[in-house]
Picture (cartoon, rainbow over the protein chains, first blue to last red):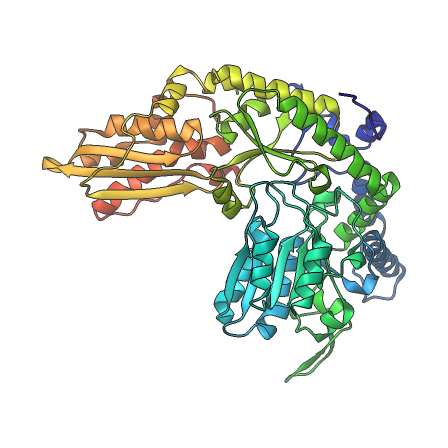
Length: 412
Length: 140
């Protein structure tokens, strides 16, 4: 198989300081990108620059530092919104995808969901797109049902359409599975769910970092993603929603920043998106995420996707040569992100990860915050290698050699 | 840490051929716990005989080699002992039983899951409460 590169990988790797370090005396081979990604120097510099040059609170004071901070924070909002094809006022900064789904649970769910209503999620969701709906169903007396999967790890659209006939209030679905790598046809799902009168929420945590995403093209009501999975800092992410929807919702948290006027017996709310950003916001990390978006936009998300698909193809081919290797997830490249969840003979993923760690190779092992999906796959856990821009064919070769070493130790 | 050192013959043997694996028809103690990090699961059942002795003990579970081997070896050690013996079992005893592998903090949880379940079950039967610590509080 041809190992052709989309990028000058050595040049990209030089942008990520952490890739210079060794682990257990070996070159760091970082293959846990679905979990969190490493940060380029440009992102780290943006954080240092904010704290060392213009640290101050946004939207309040009138001196020079505060104006610079506000300009950078709001500039980051515009950049990040533009990156996914929406307007700045449609982007609420949150801690991450989990806070986004919980915000919708409280600010939309508690007032709009009634006793006996139906909520719909799917079997391939991350816990962050299951548990908030369980809590909402419990507090409102609603029912939560799940779209099933087909044997190839794609959504069972027949099961989806059957659930739509029961008129759900919300359909919460992932854009891309963090375990199977399945890329869902969110345009079709949102169109059908909207036509059935449901609100749609798409979890984009595994999509925005890895492929071009134009949210306007598939019109979800809510779309959420996390900064730390797309080369940005931890603790910052985005909830995207149509402006009129945000305007009609109750606040999430009460406090400073989110108010217009406060009286002793009532308060009025700030404009969106500020109505949902109570307290001092995560200024530095929002600016850091803006720098990450600049970095990704400069590479081009189409190329990022192309790069990861090539690594995926190579990994499936070369790891597939190992006796006892079993991978999960669709084989159709158009429906698959650069994620390889697998098991190897009877070696438990945690034992495999321990052997790989000794070789400086970082993979995720466990249930990947998707226990219902693990039960559907009928495995207690899987190992998972996931790619990003700085990964190379050499990383895949190192992974293969590490798995073979585990095979020797476990006498597979 | 050397993985060849952790996964020596002893652990692999107990992983692939776990002793005392299964369920008891009659039992007085039944305890179960999981390790959320790995998804390891261990359930231990004990039939208590005369003089508060562990007349029979079995376990079922799924998970990594360390958690399963550790639980299996522990049931072998416990069989025939007085229940009070369980109170005296320490983390160090479990590590020694496993051949003192050099485990990182996350894998220590795997090694101690069997002990946690055994102690929780036996303490409960004796009307006491077991407070488990796997040392992760120190490294968190």
